[in-house]
Image 1 (cartoon, rainbow, N blue to C red):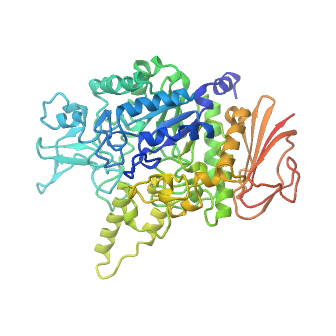
Image 2 (cartoon, rainbow, N blue to C red):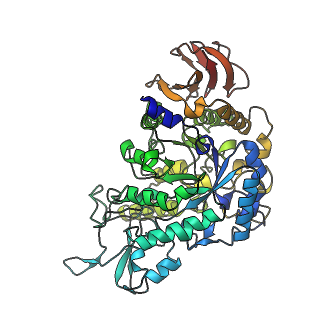
Image 3 (cartoon, one colour):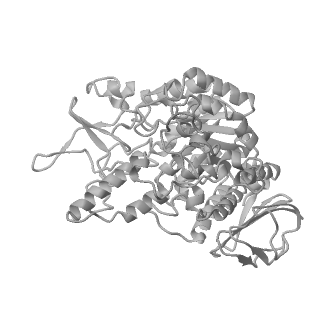
Length: 592
């Protein structure tokens, strides 16, 4: 690796070394007993987050919204949804976060708005309204039989229906890549772009916000001709459109303009962009995070999240070697280009990591595998993101729960559409929905959105009201913060130890990554090297004991962390062979 590129990668920066914690406000802490988390509840937990080791809080949307998509359908960027509190509450939150030496990053959702946003209400009034071109409007196509059809064959993300919604008032369709209540903004319009820069981004930065997590930011540039998508599923009328709207022709131009007009003027802020629908295409995503391009500091790539299946609710089994290959490609590839990574396994859009990538079959396996996953994340290069509840090993919803407990629009649409389709095909029988249930139970977004489990009492300490907006997981009596805080061998205390280790040994964050034994289907092992500091990580991703024989000479061990309370009965730490128990993780700091 050229020295100049390596130096660029290893140049120290606050955003690189920060521990970021995502708060999904509706499910974090309810202060007033209405069953919905809020800003004042979040205020009550700031000391907990600081003590955990958090440097930056990423707050999911708290803006005014009809909540069709849980707040990602925004009707006003400068008003707070009453369920969450007031603007004064957010101002106090910013102040209290800063008093504790932390930063607050807001969610920026500007690929689309709510259909109740003032911009869209104006846009749909008439074809000559000044806001008309702030959204994508197109006339219908007409079939040979005179039937009105959408402008193209694009499919929306939340169902198998069209991404176009007919508007009777003006006789045109508008584009919505997500729900019909989430019309897409037209970034080709410079007036729209500058409204985003000045009326949204600057507005929040001037209030003290410390940056943005940018929702589906790689979708803001579409091919202006809006061509038909290629046929991927001949059995469906509408097709996935992302070849024409993900990483579009002007996306880098727009982000460079955003950086020039806004981001560059606020030193010390944090920027991370969500970049979905870019499958296995590393070279397409890297330019977003190259410092010389002046766009974003980091992105959320989805390749690792899709190792167990895409589309999201159609799961597949995978080999550990696949998981390692993806992780390694992003570790070494970003290093070799001088960009920067984000490290995450959980957020509000994916199921719980211990249930997906670990083993939640028994309490013991859940404890060990959750800590193993923590050891991995805390020793990889990039900015580390933790999602609420991940630090205590919160797991997926119980498999016994019915569809009524799944609140997400995507879950409900998938289940109802599959049920209706199968009833048409099998009108005389109850259709087999076991595969649909398997997908929901393994990968639905709902799993991440169940309330935070603070203690073993009523509603897990999330709320003291009569009910909660989403049911609390039945396992909260055993799996909660109070039960784990200060408890030796708990998942929470292991996370706290690993976060301290990560901050002490900078090789975790900046070290050159070397994968060991890439084809081993039980062991994930690698070495991180930063000058004369080395961190060696060996993990058994299996419930079976395994002996690892390929550990090279690693020098003098100066510090050790493992996810078992005692050392194993075979093998000396730092030598080969190394005998590893089920889901055992051993992390070694060494010197020459």
